[in-house]
Structures are given as C-alpha cells and as structure tokens.
Amino acid sequence: MPALVLKLEQFILVLTRVGCILFFLPIWNSRLIPAQIRVFSILVISLALTPVVAGSLPPFPATWLTAVGLLLRELLLGLSLNLVVSFIFAAVQMAGDFLGIQMGFGMVNLIDPNSGVHTTVMGDIMLMLATVLFLVTNTHHLVLAVLAQSFTEVPLGGSLMMPGGLYNILVPMGQLMYQMTVKLMAPIILILFLTQVAMGLVARTVPQVQVMILAFPLTIALGLVFLSLSLMLIGPYVVGQFSWMQHPLIGVLKAWHG
Image 1 (cartoon, rainbow, N blue to C red):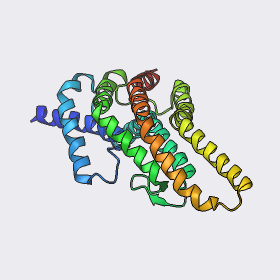
Image 2: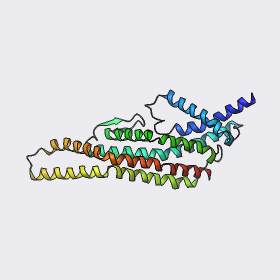
Image 3: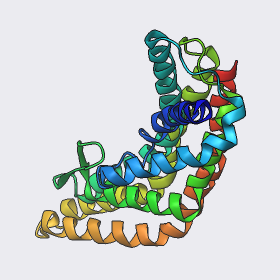
Image 4: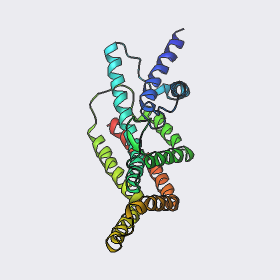
C-alpha cells in the first residue's frame, strides 16, 4: 500500500509539470481539439514519464502552501517554454496577416478559434501550414524530449523568482519573430507594392481605365501565384526554425536551473 501511494504521488508531480507545459503549447491548446483528447494525451504522457523520471522527483508537498508554490513555479516554467514555440507560430501568422492585408483581404476578418481574436484568411492559412510542418517534421517529438529532460535539468520545487538569464533568451526570440515575418513575406509584399505603384501610374496616364476594379483581382491573383511559388522556400525556412528551436528551449531549462 505505501508503494502504491508513493507511485500515485510521483504521478501527480509529473502530471503537474506535463499539464502546465502542454496546456499552453500551440496545437495542444487549440480549441479545435476536443478537451477529452487534450486531457487524455496529458494523462498518457504523464503515465509514461513517471517511471522514467521517478528517481529525480522530490518528496510530495507536505502542506498546501508548498503545493501552491510548486504549482506556480511549474506554470511559470511552462509559460516560458511555450513562449519560445509560440513566437515562431506567431511570426508565421503575422506574415500571413500582412500578406492578406496587402492582397485586399484585410476587410475579410475571421475569428481565430485558437486565440479568439480577428485574423485574416491568409493568416489562418499560414498558421495551418506551420502546424502541418510542425507535426510532419516530428518537432512535437523534440518538445516532448525537452519536457522529459526538464525533470533532470529543473527539479520540481524551488524558488518562484524568475531567473535573470531568461530575459536574455526570450527577448531575442521576440526579435526573431519580427525578423521571420519580414523574411517570409518581404518578396511577395514587394511585388504587390510594385503592382500598386504600376496601377497608380496607369491611373495617372490613362484615366479612362477603371484601376480600382482592375486592382483587386490583380493583386489577389499575383499574391496567390507568388505565394505558391514561394512555398518551396517558405517551407524549408520554417522547418529550419523549428529545428533550431531546440537551442532556446534548452537555454530556458538552463536558465531555470541556474
């Protein structure tokens, strides 16, 4: 009986960290995925990790105050790890939003079921593309490997103070988000900008041409055509960012380890 209680306590400790990390992770926190599947996946992963990391687990909290402190620290760790992943997804969606506005889809806003905010059609398409690449390239396996490694790098419990080295990792990731946005959509947006300039010149030189009627289908067609041609470059670039993502994730663990 004591051995069973010990295993149950270890499972609860592992479940706390796994739940705090996966609950905020892109794809897992999607409202499109039924809550039963999300809860079941967290339980299965926790059950599989418990015997693997049992040797590095601390004693079960003796008081409710200690348990609350442990839970808050795990929430902060989960948020800091998920920020690294979310920055890349946000960069891809932001690039799609900028492209959609330039193509004339800015007036067609949708409600993103993941975040509940207004997004453009192209933003949702680019986000779905990033999600497919994330799963096809097994980047979720990388995230799960980092999750398993976190139990040895960052033991459960400890101080609630945010480590100072964490800012040196997350701030450059925020800069990377904007850099990715520019690199992904700059060529297409440049072509659309030159198209708008050409339409302006036509309107000045040949006033009889209905530029407003011509410009909308032309910009949409050019945007879709050049986006299709750019996918062979966008895909490998996003995959490369997903592969590189392991370094900041490990850096976050080392920052929390101190």
